[in-house]
Length: 522
Image: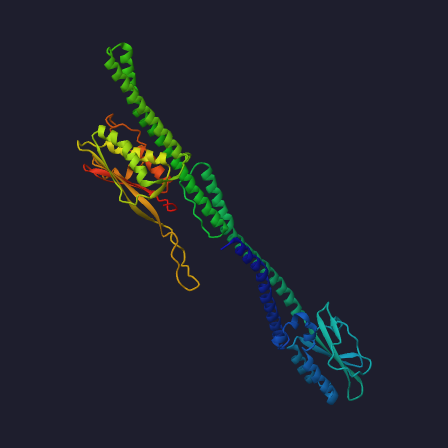
């Protein structure tokens, strides 16, 4: 869940949730008040209008003794003599007491009966009638201090004396109950809001603050050099994506550091190998130079032989230094290429002619097979491709130990399939499928085969690795920097091709590489 969604949930929770709680609370208050009306005042209120208990409680209270008021009014009009009957008045008083009400009877302004045990003087004051009036069913007086409602009527006794009945309703129970409910519900509402806020804060902490804290600790570990501890994203929101990005960065940094360590180890090995390879020709040069200086070569023939040997060894040193320089440039991606379109047959024919004399001197036969169209062209850097052929053929010559040594160069077509497939099918307007673009790139495959000592199965996967040589003893019989095949792989890779090897120990080896055809020219 994204942070924006979480913030939206928090907003809705903090706005809608209190409103919902307030509605339930209001409904609860109304129900409680209605319960009080039913229990204390013996009245049932229509629940569709129950909101009136809060908005207009006085109008509801006016109905508490309305039926009794109408009954007394009817008696006063039809049978006023009943008010002289003490038992009748006691029955009326009991009926009103169930509604938390009582009445007082006056005759000519003097109280003659009270349904309440309190002294009449303690009862809230109200106007005592001095003359008859016909007002009926009206709430005539409310005393907020004592929480009472007063309703009165006047009539004439049979002896024509003025009578007055006052019905008093005590609604203090309703008011006290409402106040208590409001206090309790206010406290409950605060508790609920505080609890929901606490839950939201804990949720936010767990989903935002806690992941940020873990990310901070991970950044500290990375800053201190600890790149081995994985960073796990515990969410899929923006922080989780950031965590995953930091984890990817950690992996890349770890790869860079590991590569740096490997490069340092390789540099040490390279220097060691290079020093070893330089030592042999330098030792030879020093020895023959000392022989010349000491007069050991006392004839012109010996001097010429010594000088030729010094020249050959100096060339070996030049070759080693040149190999190291080329490798350094290729490794740093700073080797400048000049790709041109060349005729494949003509280029390899020239190379074979240049190598033939050296092959004859070493008693190694070289054969060339090219069944392709003589107009086939390839895009190559001619100098770097020449280096590839020189390294591969020179490597083959080192390991040919047979009298009938031979090297074969074979060229054939090769198709290298693209690994990237279309994500979806494309349909023409006529609902037909167009051909897939660039289903395969045209390449040529060059094979250089020898009948040398071969490469063991366990060493074959590593022949293109830096400074790898199967002759672990590194004796002086086989010279080289150990960079030749590595340079081949890098150059062919920069040409957009691939290189690999096959070998059978004791039988010989075959090295393959591919070059891209120039299909724009014929």
